[in-house]
Amino acid sequence: MAAWQIWQIVTNFGDSALLLPVAAVLVGWMLYEKAWRCATIWLLLFTPALAVVLGAKLAFLGWGIGIESLDFTGPSGHTTLSMAIYPTLAVWIVQRMPPRNHGSAYLLGWLFALVIGISRLVLHKHSVSEVVAGVALGTLVSLTWTLLSALDSRPTHHFVLASAIVIMVMCGLHGERAPTQNAIARWAIAMSGRPVAYNRYTAWPNSPYRKIRYIDPWGV
Image 1 (cartoon, rainbow, N blue to C red):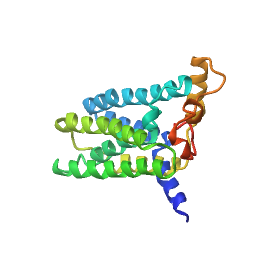
Image 2: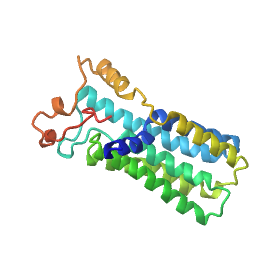
Image 3: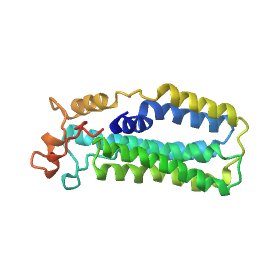
Image 4: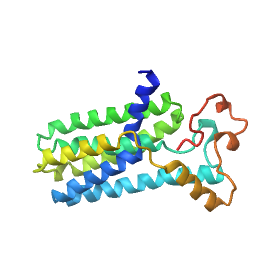
């Protein structure tokens, strides 16, 4: 197996086609356990983070708004979702264990998400600034949730069943790609009135980053 194929397998763990259903299972698990505060806090953190990613993409695709000097079109969606969801999921899974295990679980989830972010760089899907922004935004969600929900954590009584559901969802949806790129581009075109969406090359024709061959010039 070629190295790029391995990185593609890794990056697929950050696709919204997989992670949004995982997020739904996670929130459903919290609600089933009657951890209302945990679920509410996470949704209040996660939803604005998604809005930031979407808003940045629309601004660039529709109006060419970005930071050319940083090669920045918006936070990496894969990285943001991964950083927000995997550490949260890891901490929630170990709720039955003593609190001292929560930090280790968070770190493992965070490192896994970081590898997904790195895969976006290796595959030339995003610039360094976009991945760093995704790391920061997603970490803000998961770390804030972990700190605010620590006192409200409780043992999960359906650990095996819920974990099995998460694993089945991940196995079943791994490799699927959500049509977010085309959808966001269509919205941007409709909102801006442009005939086509901006990309890095049309927005920044003289950028020194033109030498980088982005597989996905939109950076979505």
